[in-house]
Amino acid sequence: MSVRKIAVLGAGTMGAGIALVAARSGYDVHLRDVSDDLVARGRRTLEANLAKGVELGKVTPEERDGALARLSAGTELKTAVDGAQLIIEAVPEDLGLKQDVFAQAAEFAPREAIFASNTSSLSIAKLGGGTDRPDRTVGMHFFNPVHVMKLLEVVVGPETSAATLAAAREVGERMAKDVIVVRDSPGFATSRLGVLLGLEAIRMVEEGVAAPADIDTAMTLGYGHPMGPLRLTDLVGLDVRLKIAEYLHTTLGRGAFRPPDLLRRMVHEGKLGKKSGQGFYRWEK
Ligand SMILES: NC(=O)c1ccc[n+]([C@@H]2O[C@H](COP(=O)([O-])OP(=O)(O)OC[C@H]3O[C@@H](n4cnc5c(N)ncnc54)[C@H](O)[C@@H]3O)[C@@H](O)[C@H]2O)c1
Image (cartoon, rainbow, N blue to C red; front, side, top):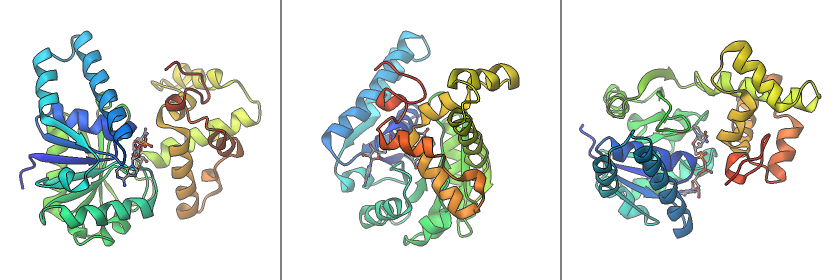
């Protein structure tokens, strides 16, 4: 099946990024969130990204105009999914919420539409099981920032069909991503390792082993990581990381995934990282 229109549900960090890359790749895109303010915020992020791309000479003004012409955004779910061959949800990492979003989308989506989840960790089987189309449910795990990060982790549930996998792969390749295919298991191939490193770094801050910047430098200069685990946690969002850690702790049952108290405290205090202006670092708006 050939994908022409993509509906992106959730216009936060990831949804805005996925919509941007999809529109730049020639797809018609509808970006949806639950309030006008959130839709406007997503659109602003996306437009700012495009403007920056033009400024840096990475996007031509024609490409920017083309992408914006293919993009629409709003709060109406029916408008978002109407005529879409692919629906990508990027709402918060909560199984019940994501199941509800898919169930609501199924009321208006074309019968043949594929449901993809940008989940970082949750079971594709459980997400697909709650829909009328488990064979057309798949994980499409993009990385932040979506227009920069090359990886797309496609997650295949037990009932995901070969045709669905092929369609997800084709879309990823058209978005110029390197696609890996991973079996549906908690945290897949990426979050399971990445989150573990982040949690241990937070425990080291808690124990006063070193300052956040020094822990990050240990990994960038000592191990050649492009970014330290605490800075990355700030970019991802501490709330997002906490949810993933809780899920991995429950499903994999290993102490190493237990969320550190410091992480819980910071989320409770609204220190969510870059998006709130404060995390392990202070971020200018
Ligand atoms: N932040 C990252 O670096 C990152 C990376 C890869 C994957 N993910 C995954 O992507 C998903 C989204 O993460 P995020 O960081 O973009 O979160 P976010 O909090 O920035 O954005 C989520 C958005 O979804 C919206 N939303 C909530 N309910 C909705 C509904 N019913 N319909 C439409 N929109 C709704 C919220 O209003 C919010 O704008 C999560 O599953 C997360 O695990 C995040």
